[in-house]
Each structure stands twice: as structure tokens, then as C-alpha cells.
Length: 244
Image (tube, rainbow, N blue to C red; front, side, top):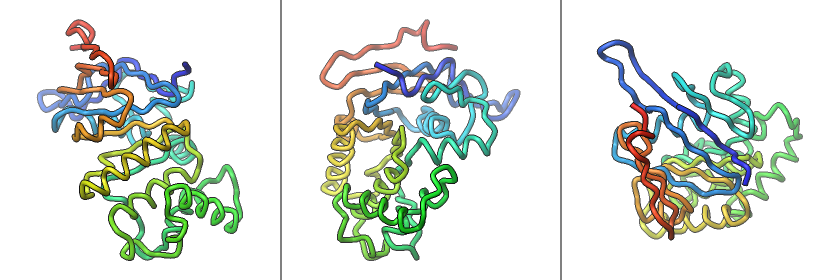
């Protein structure tokens, strides 16, 4: 199966000398197209740093990150922004919706900023409406965030992530601000999108959320210590392969 994501020796160091902090240490990970992978680990394990690099929000200090066959490790900030907009859909814990805009206009934002497709405003709206319909919010297109429940706001955020038909969906603690029932509904929606062929990488501290994924990759102190296929055996990474 084709790898959508492949990292080799991925290392991120903040600071220099005695104050240097190794957030990631020689991380090697592959995600095949169409997989649903959860990234877990204790606070400070490097989950957020890895997510930022996979999302082209940051660059590694060393190592390579190949996305869809292209090494994006050392692209300029402008080129990274282009990759983010065209290829990656983000779902954040805090939704990140603009309060003055309707659900439809929030979903339209990445389409309006996509300089490659040059859609008309009407075409953007039609695609946004279809994305909202796909997450069960077709009747909420003209509601503002404060008129929606937390679960509905996260569905709008997922619709926004889907708007550009991204190659990769990155979800960062997508149920962190939701009650149990709403959180379960969001996980069922992500599972449904995965069933339709979406590639999803999710950072979570919640084992119940991780149980929805096909694989669980666990980080400790910036290293991958296990790569477990849900419903299968855990593959522990020998210390000699963890780097450092």
C-alpha cells in the first residue's frame, strides 16, 4: 500500500547548548494512504511537535518528512503554507471557528484562500454546503458558532477540514472540549470518513478515542516506543531502533 506519510530520522531540537530540548529523537514512521492512526503519549512526549511537523506548521531540525512523495522537510514558509492549504485539513480541540461568520462561511475560508482552484464565491458556497451536509449539518449552514452546540461546532470544523478535499486530515485532541456523548459522535464521524477513504492522523490522550483508530503509535521522551495495531499485536520498538 502506498505511503502518504514517511518520516526518517525526524528530530526536533529547541534551543542550543545546555538548554537544548530534544522534542523528537530520530522518529521513523509511515502512514499508508487511507489509514487511521492515533498518536498517544504523556505530556511532553513530543506528540504536538510531531503533529506540527506533519501538518507543515514547523520544520524538523534533522531528518526528512515525505508527504505524497515530496520531501517537504525544508520547504520555505510560503511553500509550506501552500502545502497546508492544498493537502491538509486540520481539526483542533478548540474548533477555531470565527464567531462572526456563519457555519457555511467558516467552511468556505480555506476555499477562498486556495489560489490554485480559483473557485467563484458561489462555487465555494456550494462546496461548503455539501461539506456541512456530509457531517450532518446541512440545516445549520446559516447559524453562527454561538448558536451551535460544542459537538456541532466541531462538526463545522471537520467540514472545514474536508472542504479542499485534502490528502490528510490531522485531528488534535478533537474531543477534548466535548462531553462524552458528543465526543463519541465526533469519533464515529471520523471513523465514517476513514471508511470512505480518508487518511487521518489524530493526537489524543484518551484510550477510548484511540480505540477508533487502526493503529496507535506511542511516543515517550520524543521517541516511538510502540506501534500497536488495534485488534492485533503490539510491536514494541527495540531500544537500539529508538535512537539516542
